[in-house]
Length: 358
Image (cartoon, rainbow, N blue to C red; front, side, top):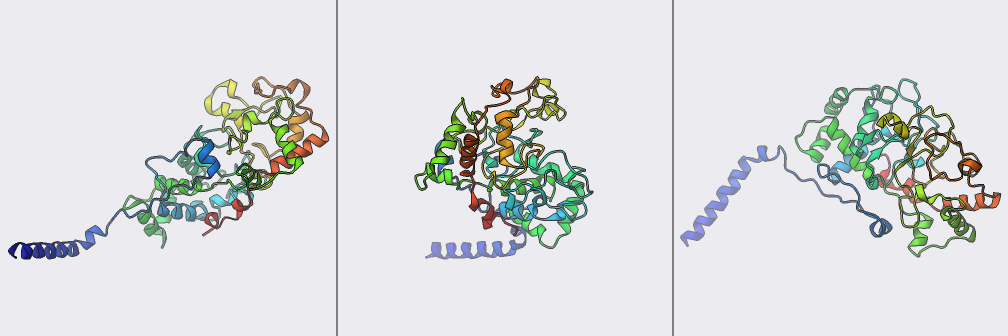
């Protein structure tokens, strides 16, 4: 009986102590909710696991914060431009303009890259020229870029800290760590990792839930045929649902290279004129095409590879028919190839409410 009384008294004292210390325990209790990526079936069966940094795990709180930051112009110097200004969800998170305009009216020299399936970028190089490694660094750079948001991280941190909502959102996601560029970039990267596109007609064809037309199948065969389209070396196949190798190539756009691309980053002349292979998913939404947006239509792109290749000192060996100007497809073959490429369209991706402006 005495033991029972002692246990009860001990329990009550513990409750009293917890109550007295409520203020200190409230300062930060790690209550973040893990939110692992929902990996599509084809991704799970055909390719490696996504890249999730150990110091930035996916959480519901981090993703929610990153989503809000992605759409908030507070990240720009004059509060007029957000990440979404140049990465519009209706365009598969790219810009329909050839070059994006920054807050000071200046234009860049590259077309905005679409944002999806970024967690599977095994090369871990981002932007057309691969100048940043890691998705967190990709999210970091535009804030201070003088032709984009043109601000400083201390200014951004100060504005966010003075906001009515953000301090509590950051506390929920990252505890009592001070709001800074690291946490902002981590949150945005968490949101960008959930931008997964994997519900196209061709995906469903591979899963056995959809059929392709004869023209679309013909187009796929042209895509895979080294004597025809020969597209799969850089852009994958039915065994690579990313539809890119995420590597860098000189694809014969110019005989004289003025934009060095990867070469400017590495300092290696053999990399001059090389740019990242974009995914072929959602092409119907992502025009214009190429790193500089020079092609307005898919027909322009196909014509380039068919008869528009330009030789240069660093042209990729995969452009095997450059001496002939390209792969020389017939009018019907071009139409069939385009029909296949459009089967990689994911309508659900651009209308997913989880990706929209909160």
